[in-house]
Amino acid sequence: MDIKERIEIIDDDITRQPVHAIVNAANSSLLGGGGVDGAIHRAAGPQLLAECRTLGGCPTGQARITKGYNLPAKYVIHTVGPVWEGGDQNEDRLLENCYRNALKLAVEHDIRTIAFPSISTGIYGFPIERASRIAAKTVKAILEQEQRIEKVFFVCFGQHDYQVYQEAVKEVFGTE
Ligand code: AR6
Image (tube, rainbow, N blue to C red; front, side, top):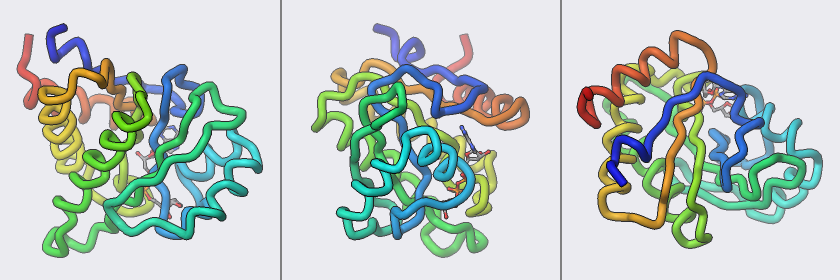
């Protein structure tokens, strides 16, 4: 399949996506928070927090997997994005690691369809133009080497974010 058909951008709520796994933009405690993390915990139900408590947290750039409980998705892959501190604190590399490590776990668990939110670009303040290009480049590189991932969705919350991701994906994956 053409690589461009393996990436799709959606403007929607990630908790409603009928994919094998959704990715959570968590914090290093993995014990919940605001933003997409709060929405995922609310939609999944309290068993998600109970499982997260057994994990002992997660360092920035790494990822952990749990079940999805009441979500349509079978799994939640929790990753911890970097807090934006101006760009010279290794933020780009740490963000890239989030996408790489989430997709690595996906392959290990035979997950074929996966939806990402825009990691770090909300409460953590990472500029979305820059973050979306890192997301698109990293995902493209992995899809090229890894046929077991069939499709990746970038789930944007709102038209502005959606447009920014459209541009980034066009730039990275090519235009037609
Ligand atoms: N579906 C899809 N995207 C969403 C949803 C949703 N239901 N809700 C928000 N977004 P953020 P971060 C978008 O702040 O910047 C939490 O407290 C949102 O518009 O959720 O990585 C954690 O516990 C934005 O584009 O995550 C951490 O403490 C994107 O999701 C901290 O926030 C990410 O925004 C992580 O901050």
